[in-house]
Length: 93
Image 1 (cartoon, rainbow, N blue to C red):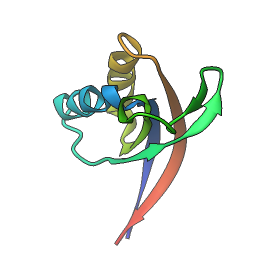
Image 2 (cartoon, helix red, strand yellow):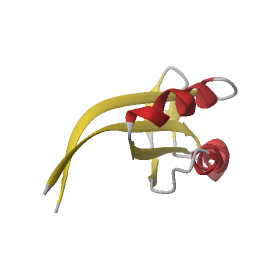
Image 3 (tube, one colour):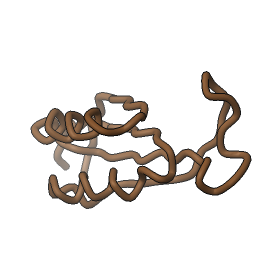
Image 4 (cartoon, rainbow, N blue to C red):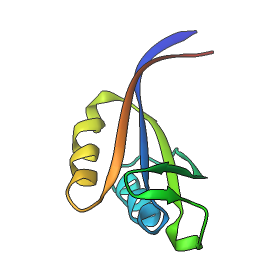
């Protein structure tokens, strides 16, 4: 077994930005991700309860640190979103 140090990047954005977020990941040769719809309440009010275009999604990506800064920079330029970053150790058999 080998232990890898990786980062978990969690991106919360409007559902309309999801396709663009995934395209950015693909351009950086990141093909593994998990996405799902989320709802909640915040500064912009209750989200995810109305029309499909008003919903939010989370996209989670586990990646090595080398790709992280370039990917995050691309997300911060044009989108209104929330980025969360976690340190992880992953063991693969």
